[in-house]
Length: 274
Image 1 (cartoon, rainbow, N blue to C red):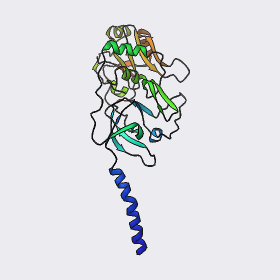
Image 2 (tube, rainbow, N blue to C red):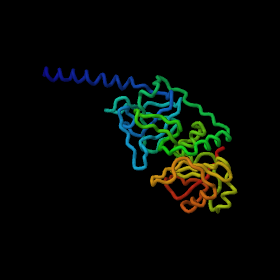
Image 3 (cartoon, rainbow, N blue to C red):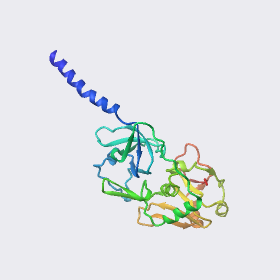
Image 4 (cartoon, rainbow, N blue to C red):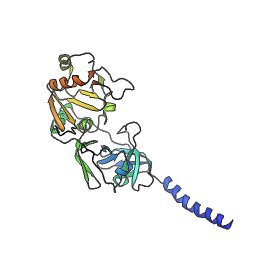
């Protein structure tokens, strides 16, 4: 009986500090500088060894949070010290995806911070920024050409397709194509041939589907960031608008709006947002 009582006392002494530690977990945090946000707690750890896939990409990177990004701290993953599970209004994670950040990169806050207030640049500045990105490498999850370094071993300096637009608009536009297919206003393109499409498209229109976005620069040119795992043209490139539409129409059909509840589909839409 005495032994059992002693055991219970010791057990309580172990449990109480754990409960206090959980209660002291800060509710909010802010990024004071650009920081990588991952979909894996192990990848977010400062002790992580990050591995690239056969395309040379670290698929655990979700996006790069810009300075001032506000986070809600959800949990501290068990067994992985120094990592926090977070959520943010600046990034709508795909269904079932959780976000993780190294705690040392955050400024912890007891109260909810106001967060970033992105200012949309003028159209001419956006186009200039897009043009200046040509030649930069494709980086999965990248939305900052200067990049950030994780654990001193991998520098994420480059742009993916929606990250190209996100950087050019100072983080004003949605970060993923899942949201870009509904962003702005629809352009009626269903059933249109290539000549009709050419007449309708305007600078900064988005030719988009769930998985990729192409940005119209002018009446003759588009820009996009592409990943080519077969050694072909890669990164941020420009292409003649007609040529890009000809290729696209061999693979997808134009639609006025993205069907509700549809994930991957052989369609594309055009969104006018500016």
